[in-house]
Image (cartoon, rainbow, N blue to C red; front, top):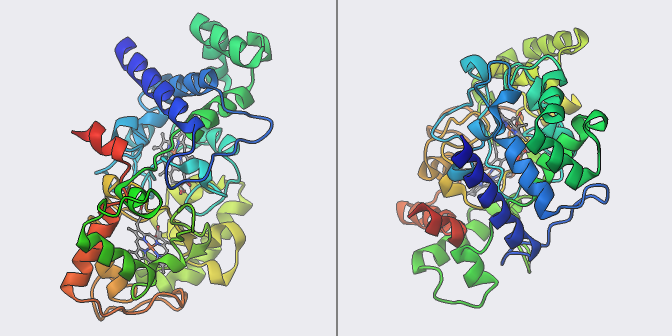
Length: 369
Ligand code: HEC
Ligand code: HEC
């Protein structure tokens, strides 16, 4: 236990120091004014992040589903497993570069990392606590936590609330920055040999024929590979279109009964596929999810909100078919107008996949070996 803690702590510190300078290809990280990121705060956050005592059965921590050594995801699990082995309906996203998201969760139901961090503890599909009492008891009574919280927030144990816990977790997450990939060295670092010919052709397809960059944005000085918007690209909802009116009713009933949105969408596969619609109720949001970043994407298979596609080649095939995994299958009426059959040949598909593989941070590639 201790050695695991120490390892996580040292990883936390390492990432923090590298985050202070912007990494090649990424803009600087901005922390909210009320919660500046410091190395000590991020280290405290790292410790909270891996403490499984903060779950109903003492079996799950944030790190169980967002494993630091596994690009902060829980691959190869299709959808994540919460306390008491509860199988949820969504795939755990990698938390690398989560600092740049303008909303959190795949449907954007939470605004900030601070607000998000308080929710998994009390979601029955994740950590399953009834309230924060047991967490507060631990951090108020254990010397190492008392000392660390005092050093970071100047608060006595009695004055600690879930807010300080969330702020420390957010500071830790904000320091998990991973840019400086082969692509960044080629595009922003002036290293013309950093990408293979195939990867360079793949990038051209990404910008042009594939139309990928219309949602996975690439800027002039940096690239987040997301427009932060919500789109229906034909995952999950295609097979459910006739059931949508019924699902919409079930969602309204659950909300009227006061069930938390996280629990509703994470514990029912069908309701989960409604995506952004569950948050804003607009027809145009049916089956829409936030465009995820593609940085480090080769480390976090399987893909999509439901983990339904196993490989990057499978993802590209889905787009090539115009939003269905099997050519000729039906798409839903809510499919984004930006998704159309691409008619890429096998070589072009290989090139696009090779390009996606060039987006892995060099530091993570070295760590993997
Ligand atoms: C049972 C597995 C599980 C646990 C435990 C868990 N998460 Fe997650 N996390 C997920 C899943 C699944 C999602 C996606 C949920 C959704 O989109 O509705 C997610 C989403 C997130 C996001 C949003 C990322 C994005 O790109 O939008 C953040 C941030 C996050 N988790 C942080 C945490 C923190 C902090 C903890 C601990 C307090 C934690 N998670 C515990 C599975 C888990
Ligand atoms: C209309 C906007 C849009 C376009 C165009 C688009 N994407 Fe996406 N992409 C998304 C959204 C939204 C998701 C997440 C869908 C979900 O979770 O169900 C996604 C998911 C992905 C994923 C999986 C990422 C993960 O972590 O699970 C990959 C890889 C990907 N897209 C690559 C591409 C490529 C390559 C192209 C061009 C051929 C492309 N995208 C075109 C919006 C788009």
